Length: 133
Image (tube, rainbow, N blue to C red; front, side):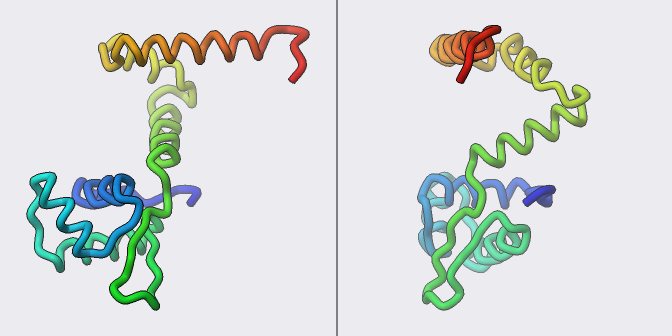
Protein backbone atom coordinates (compact mmCIF):
# COMPACT_ATOMS: atom_id res chain seq x y z
CA UNK A 1 0.00 0.00 0.00
CA UNK A 2 2.19 2.80 -1.30
CA UNK A 3 -0.07 5.74 -0.52
CA UNK A 4 -2.95 4.51 1.67
CA UNK A 5 -6.15 6.51 1.87
CA UNK A 6 -6.75 8.47 5.04
CA UNK A 7 -8.67 7.16 8.03
CA UNK A 8 -11.60 8.74 9.79
CA UNK A 9 -11.56 8.84 13.60
CA UNK A 10 -14.21 6.09 13.67
CA UNK A 11 -12.26 3.88 11.27
CA UNK A 12 -9.14 4.37 13.38
CA UNK A 13 -11.03 3.25 16.50
CA UNK A 14 -12.13 0.05 14.77
CA UNK A 15 -8.60 -0.58 13.50
CA UNK A 16 -7.21 -0.16 17.02
CA UNK A 17 -9.64 -2.80 18.26
CA UNK A 18 -8.49 -5.18 15.54
CA UNK A 19 -4.84 -4.59 16.46
CA UNK A 20 -5.65 -5.42 20.07
CA UNK A 21 -7.89 -8.43 19.35
CA UNK A 22 -5.91 -9.81 16.43
CA UNK A 23 -9.12 -10.76 14.62
CA UNK A 24 -12.84 -10.71 15.23
CA UNK A 25 -16.35 -10.84 13.90
CA UNK A 26 -18.48 -7.70 13.66
CA UNK A 27 -20.19 -8.76 16.90
CA UNK A 28 -16.89 -9.27 18.75
CA UNK A 29 -15.46 -5.99 17.49
CA UNK A 30 -18.65 -4.14 18.41
CA UNK A 31 -18.58 -5.67 21.92
CA UNK A 32 -14.99 -4.50 22.41
CA UNK A 33 -15.88 -1.02 21.15
CA UNK A 34 -18.75 -0.95 23.69
CA UNK A 35 -16.31 -1.92 26.48
CA UNK A 36 -14.26 1.10 25.41
CA UNK A 37 -17.29 3.37 25.65
CA UNK A 38 -18.22 3.46 21.98
CA UNK A 39 -21.78 2.23 21.50
CA UNK A 40 -22.51 1.84 17.81
CA UNK A 41 -25.11 -0.20 15.98
CA UNK A 42 -23.97 -3.50 14.52
CA UNK A 43 -24.56 -2.11 11.03
CA UNK A 44 -22.34 0.91 11.75
CA UNK A 45 -19.43 -1.34 12.71
CA UNK A 46 -20.05 -3.51 9.64
CA UNK A 47 -20.01 -0.40 7.43
CA UNK A 48 -16.77 0.83 9.00
CA UNK A 49 -15.16 -2.60 8.47
CA UNK A 50 -16.27 -2.57 4.83
CA UNK A 51 -14.77 0.90 4.35
CA UNK A 52 -11.53 -0.23 5.99
CA UNK A 53 -11.51 -3.24 3.67
CA UNK A 54 -12.00 -1.13 0.56
CA UNK A 55 -9.13 1.12 1.69
CA UNK A 56 -6.86 -1.90 2.21
CA UNK A 57 -6.54 -1.69 5.99
CA UNK A 58 -8.68 -4.75 6.82
CA UNK A 59 -9.17 -8.17 5.26
CA UNK A 60 -11.64 -10.99 5.79
CA UNK A 61 -12.38 -14.41 4.36
CA UNK A 62 -15.65 -13.93 2.47
CA UNK A 63 -16.35 -17.68 2.54
CA UNK A 64 -16.34 -17.77 6.35
CA UNK A 65 -19.62 -17.18 8.15
CA UNK A 66 -19.61 -15.02 10.11
CA UNK A 67 -16.82 -13.01 8.49
CA UNK A 68 -13.71 -12.76 10.62
CA UNK A 69 -11.85 -9.50 10.10
CA UNK A 70 -8.16 -8.82 10.72
CA UNK A 71 -5.96 -5.81 10.15
CA UNK A 72 -4.01 -5.86 6.88
CA UNK A 73 -1.54 -3.32 8.18
CA UNK A 74 0.22 -3.37 11.54
CA UNK A 75 0.19 -0.48 13.96
CA UNK A 76 3.95 -0.10 13.53
CA UNK A 77 3.72 -0.05 9.71
CA UNK A 78 0.98 2.56 9.75
CA UNK A 79 2.87 4.63 12.31
CA UNK A 80 6.01 4.51 10.20
CA UNK A 81 4.09 5.61 7.10
CA UNK A 82 2.35 8.44 8.92
CA UNK A 83 5.62 9.68 10.45
CA UNK A 84 7.36 9.49 7.07
CA UNK A 85 4.50 11.50 5.54
CA UNK A 86 4.75 14.09 8.34
CA UNK A 87 8.52 14.31 7.89
CA UNK A 88 8.10 14.78 4.14
CA UNK A 89 5.33 17.36 4.53
CA UNK A 90 6.72 19.36 7.44
CA UNK A 91 10.47 18.74 7.65
CA UNK A 92 11.73 18.23 4.09
CA UNK A 93 11.94 14.49 4.72
CA UNK A 94 14.03 14.72 7.88
CA UNK A 95 12.84 12.75 10.91
CA UNK A 96 15.00 14.47 13.55
CA UNK A 97 12.73 17.52 13.94
CA UNK A 98 9.78 15.21 14.66
CA UNK A 99 11.67 13.29 17.34
CA UNK A 100 13.10 16.46 18.86
CA UNK A 101 9.63 18.03 19.03
CA UNK A 102 8.29 14.96 20.84
CA UNK A 103 11.19 14.93 23.32
CA UNK A 104 10.98 18.66 23.97
CA UNK A 105 7.22 18.40 24.36
CA UNK A 106 7.62 15.93 27.22
CA UNK A 107 5.99 13.08 25.30
CA UNK A 108 8.41 10.42 26.61
CA UNK A 109 8.60 8.75 30.01
CA UNK A 110 11.99 8.31 31.70
CA UNK A 111 12.00 4.63 30.62
CA UNK A 112 11.23 5.57 27.03
CA UNK A 113 14.00 8.18 27.02
CA UNK A 114 16.45 5.57 28.32
CA UNK A 115 15.36 3.15 25.60
CA UNK A 116 15.82 5.90 23.01
CA UNK A 117 19.27 6.63 24.42
CA UNK A 118 20.25 2.94 24.09
CA UNK A 119 18.98 2.86 20.50
CA UNK A 120 20.99 5.96 19.62
CA UNK A 121 24.12 4.54 21.27
CA UNK A 122 23.70 1.26 19.42
CA UNK A 123 23.19 3.05 16.09
CA UNK A 124 26.23 5.23 16.75
CA UNK A 125 28.38 2.12 17.42
CA UNK A 126 27.07 0.44 14.26
CA UNK A 127 27.92 3.51 12.17
CA UNK A 128 31.48 3.93 13.49
CA UNK A 129 34.10 4.29 10.73
CA UNK A 130 35.87 1.04 9.98
CA UNK A 131 33.06 -1.03 11.48
CA UNK A 132 31.91 -3.87 9.24
CA UNK A 133 28.58 -5.59 9.62
